[in-house]
Image (cartoon, rainbow, N blue to C red; front, top):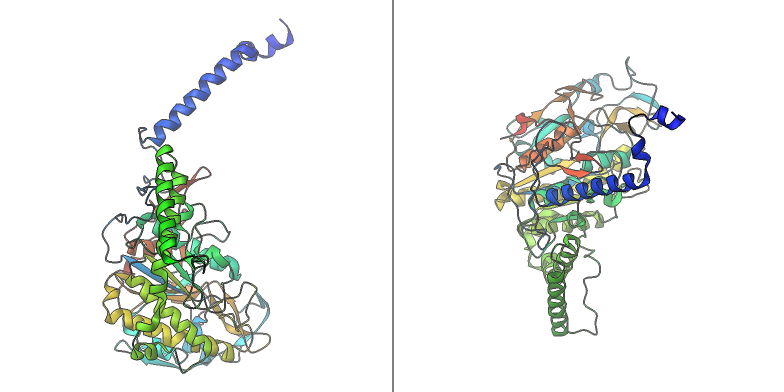
Length: 500
């Protein structure tokens, strides 16, 4: 027996080239058959999520990827508005009242770290604005946001949130996509992937950027990640319409319509030749939506029909130029939701390179001045938007989310004027369809330093948002790189105490 026969007594024939090619060919054809059967839905469902559940895959027509689809279970919320404040709003200066900050003001009690995100720490600092009881519930809210404070009885606060990063880009990613890394779908993309939209002439998901520009993580906050490109957010604002929609000056309206009609017929003919090409169908659907947006966008962006009383209530005039621009964005958000857009994400704060309290809420220095400046921009228009939607009956079917990526420390930085990042405790609030009113869920410790009672992860928060939209966060998945990916990764529980 030679060496090969000794080492491979049972498998020598596999080394024969002819036998190997024959075996490989049969194996490859079997794999191809399995893929065909899978694509046609003829294989038994054996895929399971991390929680052991079968995924619920939306039935998406490539010719009409934005068509409305039913939720997993009935819930009152049909649309969602996310008001996002980049930079980290200080919870201990807005909605999370901590009397011990007054008691220990100027002191450094045990347990306070020597160094945090940006360096050495200073002493405990009382709130920079006075807290007062608000509404029938008497909930303590600071004078920094007097207009939102008046609506306390309509809001549902989550005071025990904590996150996985103290850096803004990663914090924004985690809050909006469920992962600190880039490349994952945003909450809005997951929602429109599952539900489509009720309006055929506008995008299913619109991101309204701050007048000062994009937030730190840019378009990742409203990106589609590995979901089909149709479900990324379309970004524009009241002063910056979608790009490339304007008709060239030398082209008349009639010429434009005739051109679109010819292109539509050519596309239809081309699609008949390749009926199974989902990518082609998706591209055609996107181009057709862009054509319809040429007519729908100017109308929805035209605020001329808004009454003087409405413009005044939102604060379009009479304040800073930035407040006026943000107020127009708030009106645009309401108008988009009225037209049936499924998800609107409204940003209050910007700056990919930082901001330090000037272009967003990141107040490492002079928080008294910088937070006050951001509040002047955000408070009145946001409060007017909520009140306007409530008066129009829109909150019966619209979920509203007010969020930021993390909180700020109860003690000052060594400079003595600013608060550092705090990933261990922060506050967000909800209102609208399916949400319990006049509720405060969870709490931070006596200083607002760490989540204490009912600690709530961002996974839990996002699981609850999806539930309020009628979606099971464990079963809304997308197969990517060998995994059933979802917004909440392999974590998260619905917070039942927030549900009406």
